[in-house]
Image (cartoon, rainbow, N blue to C red; front, side, top):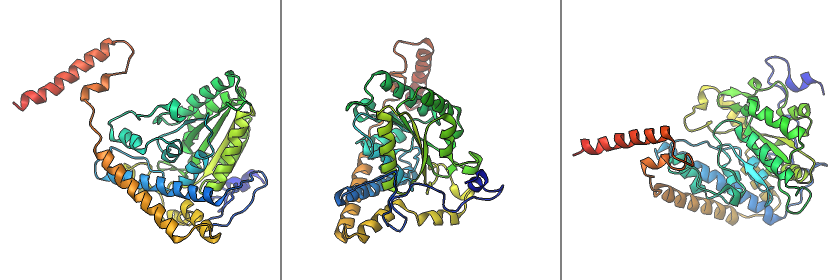
Length: 376
């Protein structure tokens, strides 16, 4: 394959169907790949389906809460559920996740309470979960910076001397296609490669870096960048939960056994807005969204279950009912979250008193007191 056949001529959108690892077609047909064998029982497939439906329902509820003024902002994962659930369910006990601000599905796989995510975007906490307990770091807003954190953590694992043992863990860093243009991400590739760090770089290529299309980020497929840094890269169908599970599982195992980093490009699509402050109708075509609806990650698993007589209508109705019930409970719990005391924003910023912080705290306290005086 030539470079031109990959990237196309200027103005050419490129191949309609990119080369990628796929184990489940959009029509729900199971296919095999020689490098990524995967055996799943009926119960395991049904569990994956339940995960997909549940995290989509959580996401939709969060979007609705934002529209109603109950959350300040929300970064939707709509369309990216398979990439997150597949990779999330590949994680082991000792692995550590370094997310962006959109990995709600991975958080679900790590047993992080969705209410903590809503609290963060409601502005009443800083995340509220213990990263060490859940193997899931706090959300990172600064684009790409978590890749350096993840690489440093992985180098620490390496120096612990546990690679290749039952207690070995790896790190996985999530980021989007736009983040690949950030210096932090490329620096992390250098460190990970040179030090053979036990890390998986998981790029959810959802085609749009806010309003910038993929062709503004690269002229070759993103996964091929790994070759230039000296470690393997693979592109996987990001709407195929089976393939994402198998590919991530293999990459994590390679990292845990001292084989170094892997770059995974999950080729998917952001069906919603970048965040709830974004309007995607201003920069992309409706026809593009309609084409990707035919590759919906949930519908293809449902088709697989129906095709193989692995689930009946009662199962699908139960999953939907359970997801709706969870959403109702989550909404009620979110609305009941107490607002923190305004001055608590100054707590736990520095270990010791800081003159500038003390001055700002006093100014803010005086500002708040002015409202009390005005109301008398």
